[in-house]
Length: 298
Figure 1 (tube, rainbow, N blue to C red):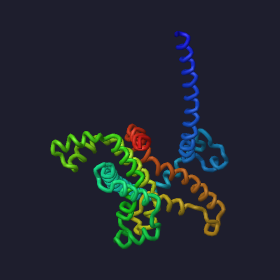
Figure 2 (cartoon, helix red, strand yellow):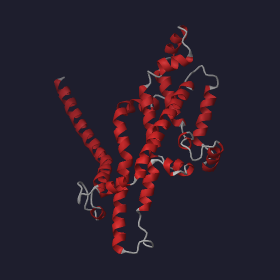
Figure 3 (cartoon, rainbow, N blue to C red):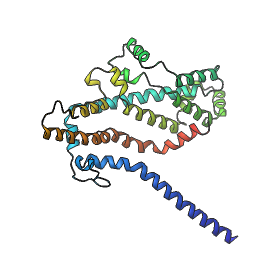
Figure 4 (cartoon, rainbow, N blue to C red):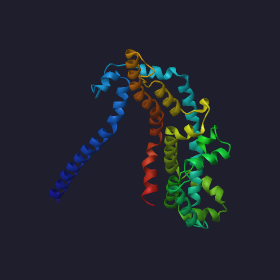
């Protein structure tokens, strides 16, 4: 008996060591690109282009960050993106949770047909031109609602929410509440929502990240500069600092502009990613739980 325990202990130790080794390699593969972008954003771009920046910054400089924050439009973009992200996330999460709960109810007439209809919409859509015509006919062009409303419900997220409710909210709980005279609306707000922080946190993260990184809808529907999200302003900064040899005749000036453009590529990535890095730790503890419940048990 003791020999078997020792054998199993050694086997477990070897397995754990190999597991930690493989996970460490995967972690390094994932983290190194992020680390490289960070050190490249504060390094001399000439040294970066020569491949001399690998693990630590060289030729330390904050010129890229100084140049970006000299543009007042960046602060306007932060404000707009924050508003778009918060408004979109609140509306999208509310609609997804409520619709996911509705199609999870077994007493809903036509539940399977409704779910099938939603799934068809997930795989097929009208395309860019019909969507633009709908947004235009609704008088939402060049308004904040053109960025928020058109994509405020994702069918995939709705199905994840539905599966979560099916597997996590017992039918007996609904029956007991109905016996006590609880209405469907009251049951949803007082029982279902408080029992669903995991899936709500996952949906908030999904929608917030997607909206924060979104720029194409704003590019299509927004004409006023003061309504541009951060990503459009960052794109414009990069385009303004790109090198055009036909316009810039001086070789020294062209080299300096190219040096700045190379640096800005890394700086803009860092600036656009920092807000999501700040938010993620607050929902991380719910993330794995919510995704596994919504994806595996369905």
